[in-house]
Image 1 (cartoon, rainbow, N blue to C red):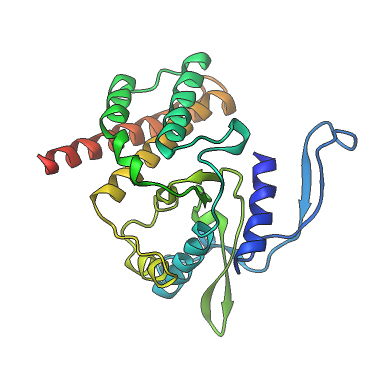
Image 2: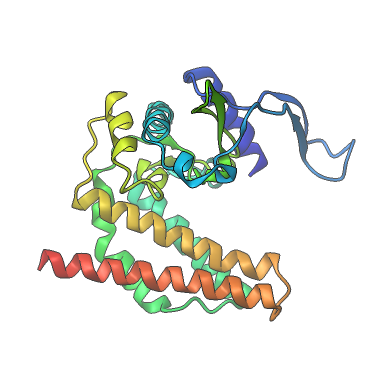
Length: 259
């Protein structure tokens, strides 16, 4: 993941006007420390997550973030998926491999994914929706408020930078819409940057597929990061399991609407 982050920083810095941290030094040899590591500059501003709610919902800020996300998605790769796993020829193939890897990891770790049979059925039912994705664009896939920096200028919040693209992949831009599907100002900025993308049923379903994949990651990651049966372990599993069930319910609602 660290290699992915540094590669993404180089691409974003070279192909967009988005500010990302300058990497001062990196070492993957294991000579200085028994692990991979890098040092980067401190950025001006603070994470959006630390700002008041009215700032987090500022239309101007969301519009600027939409424009920045569109710049990110204008960077194209040569295949789909994660580079460290090997790129695939279609987004459908890459996405199914990604999700099946997570489900297999969960089983190997002894994590019982809630409603796993329905998860598999949902993937089979909606996987054809992914075929509209023909271009492997760079997707940050972790545009949480913690990773979006803002600064104040003349009392107004301004978009400043993006950090932590360690989860980046090549593929469906829907992975960056998980938190912005109802933000009209975000879409105004995204479309103003030249992306004629509409929030239609197909994009909604593709976003739900990415939401389901992310929930599977969160559920499985608990097995690795937290002490088994601890309070945090139970709380995080409940939260991730709830998100899986909520996403499946949204898929069922979409199926009913079509019928």
